[in-house]
Image (cartoon, helix red, strand yellow):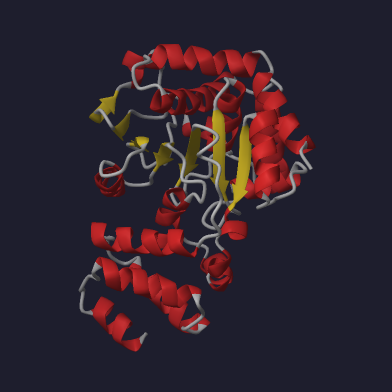
Length: 331
């Protein structure tokens, strides 16, 4: 680790193979907690390279618990990197249930909040969901609810060495960048929100060499999701696009209107208000826009307006909430 840290201090980068080896060694417990904390801190003082991101991702996927779901279902994941420091409510998780309610199959990859107050796993656990990595139960969830929830620690057991350090640091690390790229279900479709435009371009470079339908999105004020506070950029199979809110039919909203709760309980309250159709117009629209982008990722020839309509029908009809309640009933 001393050599690795010196390499970082000299502003040098790692090859794909070196990055893969570093993460494999971190996962196996080769380094002590002080060394790992030093590496994560020093590493995030510069930008990640494509080779490093690819190497870290390869290690994560090779070390994860395999799960076979995509042979039976055409899956989509809606996942953000986190780390944008915006403390919004659980938009992508809610959008996942909207997409499931619209008739699609969602493999939602999530975790406890590290750099945010309340991650998807925090709110799902609080609302009564029991995490599982049982393939039979996950398939049953997809059959009955249209969605399964993949709690990252159950599928990436090697990360147990890293989780306590990430919690103690409490800031975004390169593990934020890896979360959306390491879904163990390997979904055929993916909507990924990222906290910087530079990272969006790195993601797009990697995804364009895959067989996935993908949309990488970044809202220009720094959000890793469509926030409706500003225009947003997308990178997809169709190329790079600047999305103007006015052309999509929306006015810019105030950032405070999409803030999350100060506690998990508060966040869960907002979560259920959205599903119960008791949320504000701004909260609903933000969820629906992200759900619409996910639906459009699966159906690239559909217009955003048509996809938004599908999402809106799912939420207003109660199908999104039905998806949520059905998921909780799978035991």
